[in-house]
Image (cartoon, rainbow, N blue to C red):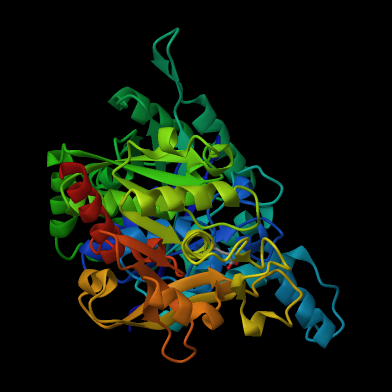
Length: 536
Ligand code: GLN
């Protein structure tokens, strides 16, 4: 029986070096050689999950099929591997402490003093190993959030030290990602920060097996051998990770650097076949070949923070390549939209209204919907964006003055969007929304059915409010129709306008399911409609 092998990915020198992309790229190469791989993220913060975090803290909150609110790196894992992740793929310090404290309250520790070592570290080790054993992966890649030297990540590094010892050399390795800065004044690449961060790891008892060096210039053999000498690794285990034009080039760059071969060698695994990455390369080729520009306006409230809309942005990268166009996605501040809607929006070939919470920016989003509806510009509203479309239609087409969502205006005379029944008794904010995958049935003669080419679909959700079915007849009679309905609860999942070339609001988040190999049908159809609008 084959045993699961474990790869730990740590980071040094600075944050934001792209551990998630390196982990995803390595996983992609191993998958392409025929191994089953999953990636797990350990986040050293005390929140149970990022569900209650402001996007300014950690960017988008990603949602898995089974309804976990997770770090946005899980989005990269899925986009690269095309395999769904789950609750177990994102562990936080909050989750670790919560389960240890719950066990203590139950008396499970039999009178022992509960300590970071061994109790917290045992819980961390359990979360890592159980992912491998439960799902029988050949390889589990565990990405440790934060930077070596942070107080918060110490228990994780300690758990890695213990696991490396317990699992043995051939069953686990550590890949350490660092930065080699280029000093333009002296025209030199500097290795000292890397040396220091490896020393820090060594102080914690962890010897990295492979170093991946982020750099903006090619690394010479001299630099590589210097790093190898100072950090006790073979020169062929010093891997260059040069800045790439797109994250999707990174697997190809890592393959050139033989990262996958080094890893398999160290884990005593067979090379199996050469990773061909056929579909992946077709995607990159199409991307390179595409020149026609399509301008899409994304109306939201985190315009200076693209990470807040990570999955939407990536979905357009996939849909753009698939349709052989270059999508220029421009962020538009919903709060700055008042009587200048025309100036702000008239040059776009398609308009998106983003998901979100709370009343900030809502009136601007509603204005953007009105502009797209009246000027017959392809429109996609996601979650709150769909709700804005419903509010706009109520106010301007059905004479429901001051129609609103009860999220924004509790005592609105026309609550066209209202709190879902099951939400009414909930008081806690964390993990209590309608989360994860739910089925939806598509109606005949709809853009939705034309996009998906099948009647039954499943999409992921993250919301508390919903189309108020008391108004459904009135809306349908007047041209806004429900073209996607949850078969069990009758919740409206998709609305479309009859008298419009392409206008769709979706209560779910299609962006969570778009991958390189499977671009999402809604983003593709919307892109196609925007291209048509441009060329008409
Ligand atoms: N705030 C809205 C709700 O809770 C929309 C949520 C979202 O856009 N994800 O229903």
